[in-house]
Amino acid sequence: MYYGYYYDPTYILIIIGALISGLAAMNVKATYGKYDKIRSARNITSNQVAEQILHSAGIYDVTIERVRGNLTDYYSPNEKVLRLSDSVYGQTSIAAIGVAAHECGHAIQHQENYAPLKLRGASVPLANIGSWISWPVIIIGLIIGNTPLAQVGVLLFTFVVLFQLITLPVEFDASKRALRILETSHILEGEEHKGATKVLKAAALTYVAALFTTILQLLRLVLIVGGARRDD
Image (cartoon, rainbow, N blue to C red; front, side, top):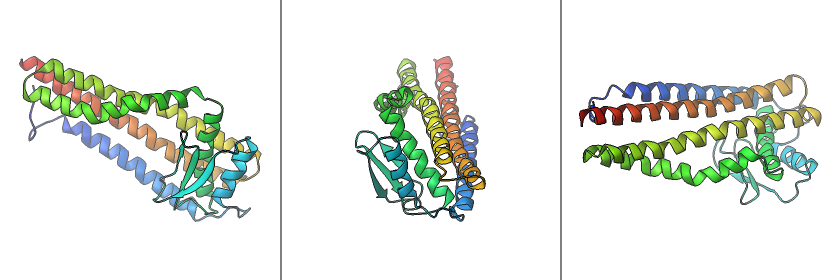
């Protein structure tokens, strides 16, 4: 049965997802904040570390830029640009160095044609379609009583779930590469390396939380559309 806008017990799934995402965000913020206060013994900045890692991997055509925001760091394969946020760029903390090294991990993946990274890039258009179109299609289908149309909307939303699923190995591998390089290059050692590990693990959990939350959203849609179908 479809419960409508004002009474929908499936909202509990949204609440659970929001709690999980909120806890993951709080954890990464707290962990980053803790290790952002600890400066590396070598007193080298995050962008210097990024340049060193890229050059040691034989990558000289990737530029490093500063981008506004807090932990808005990312690597753009199409532009070959590694962007470090205001909270990371130019900082010498263990946390900032760990994040910069993680983004370098993506650049190295790109250089090596890492299959999951290529798959994630190829799935972006489908994920965007699923994200923008699925809900309108579902809502229109429910309003006009066209259950098959609503089911198409649910199918479109699965593209978002698949994108989140593909993202996990890409992010885990980038962190694994980063931590290995930081250790073998003696950029971070001992307790410093352990601190960077905790920062990247906390960041990785946000991707796990995002996937779980998206799966809960998909389950909610299946329940709503399934209920509408039984009422037909």
